Image (tube, rainbow over all chains, first blue to last red; front, side, top):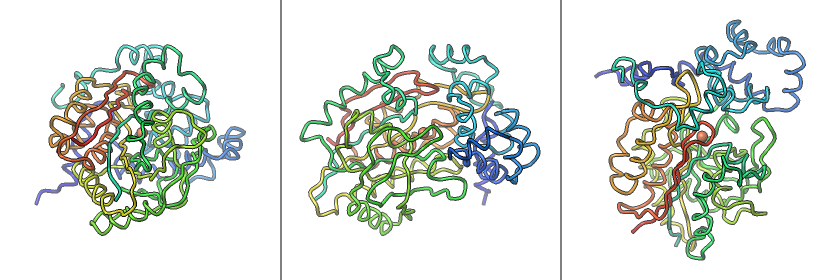
Length: 134
Length: 281
Ligand SMILES: [Fe+2]
């Protein structure tokens, strides 16, 4: 019998500019995402904002994950197992909206990104599949 | 006997909650979005249409569930649920009141029907649930219906298939029919439509695909039932997968449904807003 799980997952890697949140990423990013979750509490946000590096010492994240958090490198954080709904706690604490934070992952300025959305969003044409190039 | 009278689907974009909470509904950006809900807000106050209970299908966005627990299908059975603090304080909306007798009945019926539900009591509900309530009911002092929260994992893959969601909808219909009390019950499916909020491809919108999905809720629902996850991901963006939750609503209705109302607008924040009201014919 063909391995359904690996077939199912393999297709995800063929989507341009997209990290599907698989169980592999969920395992890799467990503490990173739990750290983000801790920022839902006002008292934690206060402690975080006062000293980010000190706050991170309490979390079992890799050095790469910690560096990417400090740099607010969201594409890197996705690669390291971060999930966007958890990362949202981080950018919300910075006072960023979804549009502002999301635009940083696209290589566009916030204004360019907003203009694209107002004009109907990014077309799926050409970004459906890496293999098919469609 | 409880009766399942209608199904409603709607996006649940957080910004649409913000717009209502901050009194921005008349601003140019928001006006055409909210205008598409005027019809429904009027329709739903008519005596025949007003639900006693809404089974509200939504997903939690790292609010009640963190990475510790990832239930595929969860049903809220407590008497009430508070709006979640998603990082900027809870939305100023009424407490969500459940019909716990009915919710427990549905939970038991679904489990006996071989849907192994997770049962939750203590849970705050986030924008996924409260934004559709605001869109459909406006800003009342109390929500005019009891709400059964039904949370679906659409975040960590594999998420449930469209077909499984459809079958859960069918089981929900059986649960409603077997409840002895005379209740008007609606099922709402929320989330979507096309959107992607992560990575370099963020901002993807596929109006053509979305419109066909809306068409086929009435014309060819069996096609929708079979769509694989990869199609949602490629065609509608990584967060477009939320539309599988619409299929729980659609599966709960009968074979033939009538579309009473449709609304579609791009954009709200990063998202294509879609909304339909369906009834059995
Ligand atoms: Fe959502």
